[in-house]
Length: 555
Image (cartoon, rainbow, N blue to C red):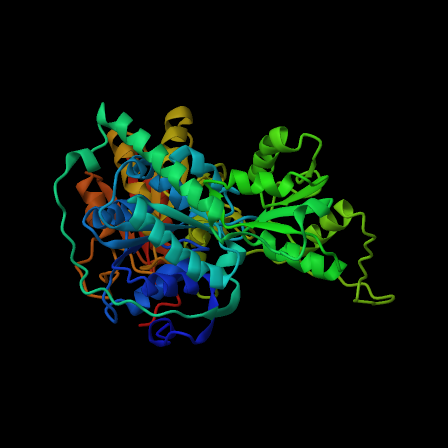
């Protein structure tokens, strides 16, 4: 990762989109970085973690995304250049803080990188489109399509944030975050200090009535000014300037990674069609779009998931070109990420171009039976022992509470032991509700990082309201699924410095839990089975901490 720090300006690097984001932040002199690890954004935190202490910025793995955003807000209130990196579900966790934060006026600057996961490759519980939050929070959103734009858009986002004293969001997707491409570097700006100063000014930072209504008016005024910038910005561009818009019948509007698929399709079909690429998703350049579609007869909107751009174009067309035929989700799916062949087919249909897709793999008289592979725990993972013991010890009709982490794999054969799954920490909250509603035997699982992240309030609620699930805390001593980042129980900070461990058992005991055992499920499986049978009979909350290190932790 030191290449991100040591490569001089004007050189070229092959970078992941996530790595390009880090380089962009270093080039503007970022001073404060906070994150909670979550794929597809994990590499951003990992890169900063590896560079922490080697450059003049502060970095932390926060306990969850809301805390990461709040910490970043404090730094931005104090005059620092701040970056917060989270995944789409992390934005949900941070939403309580985000909406009022947008009303405030920062003294420094803040860029929030949010990584969506169309198709649910690493976030299987829902397919979320964070573009929805643009109008809800009134937060400007930039959408890069490749690694170079990831770097450049981060720098632009910091400029906008500093100018308008508000947070700016950069929204990426899995295919942008994890693509590798050539990036031309700029000059790294080393900040003189990581220390800011908070100056008391309640009108600036306190969102209380009646001032909060004035703050909203100020926010909307900022959005209007940014909209003027969006109309003139080079990141909203007509790709093929050789063509005059009024002389063509067909155009394409797109953004993000979809733009790459469009350009590939046009090349394969040998088509000359003007393409309006939007780097600003919000505020959307209404005038630029209206001028683009004014003389068109047909326009294809290429975007992943929900048809936000399509609906906006439909709205603009009512006044500028009511006869315009708009194509989008009638040719492209609303579920799952786009694939190049989908866009190729859609472009061919709208352009009335014959398309013949040939299968280059010609195999005659060969029948292949490929066995279906499902996700599994790693070889040597301690969770094999945990679920084997639970399956053996628990009664047949026991309900199993699921959560987010490596233990999600228990949903698949051979265990099939997750009866519900919502989000981090919900395994405990839902377990309490089921126990109160039914009284059935229930075992709920939660990972160590998930416990610190979001399960503690639900755990306290379960104890306080006198429920009695058996809680098994899967402690493999690391945030394993997203790349082995530290958490409060590891004894290592985001800056790589030793810190006191915040032990899970101390938190459990502080909640007045009487029935608690810490067991190594690999070395003491018989004791583990015996304890499960014993604790399932308890009338109060009981807890087993299944403690054995992840197989990939270096000893």
